[in-house]
Amino acid sequence: MNVSLTPELEKFVSDKVASGRYTSASEVVREALRVLEREEKSRKEQIEDFNRELDARIAALDRGERVTSEQVREHFRRKSEERRKRIA
Image 1: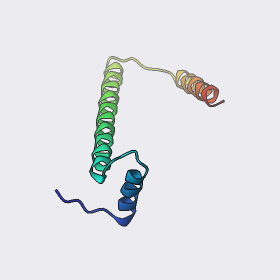
Image 2 (image 1 turned 90 degrees about the horizontal axis):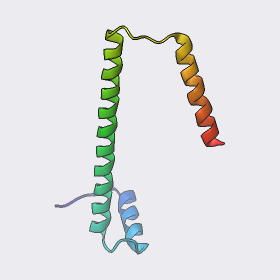
Image 3 (image 1 turned 135 degrees about the vertical axis):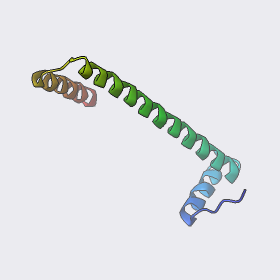
């Protein structure tokens, strides 16, 4: 297989090999593909989780389960507070 890289990517690969972390350009490319594969798998799992949650919420609405606007505001207020605590 032959692969063409932009000059920027070619320099990136060369720099990785020069750093000593990788022994060849092929090793850099294989590692990059493994990372891409993991990222795509993670994205797919996130979408599947989202769709399951969406289905569960739609089913709850179909059963007549509702939340009030006050409950929604309180939920987001708590989430916002939790994020501020994590950042601080």
